[in-house]
Length: 208
Image (cartoon, rainbow, N blue to C red; front, side, top):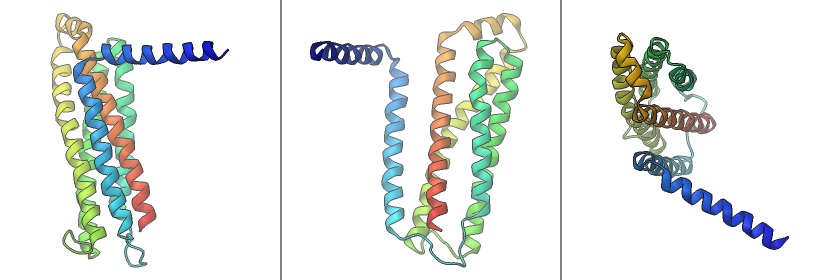
């Protein structure tokens, strides 16, 4: 029995290594980047928690942070629909969902900026209390990483809208394995940033 268990564990380890070896280098680079981003935000979040937050009745979490969280979760939903639409060869519908995700992400950035305005009006400044500095820094870094995804999303939106008007180009686009890889990586990165923000938001909510 023990030898059978060891063989099963060994085979699982070998299969895991084989999957890693078969993984596209760009995908591997993305995963490593996501790990690095996660570690960076974890360090900043711990430092923010150690400041003690804003445990005062006159300071509240910006309402636009809540609005932005809803918008970002909606964008995660629209993004989750895109791979399935791509597999069904419905490029016109895919264009609409890409455009919807793009609009929601830009609205999220706008909501974050308005949230900063609320913070400034409440007396929370970047150069003031340490908790305020970390709050600005964490939210700004999240926007910065999101903008990287938005740029590629915009490129993919334009590309899809362009090829959707031509049946020959559409066929090439759909059958291109590299395009499928791009879409898969974008969706993974997008969901990673969305749910990371949700975690950050919940911590912010607790610290106010």
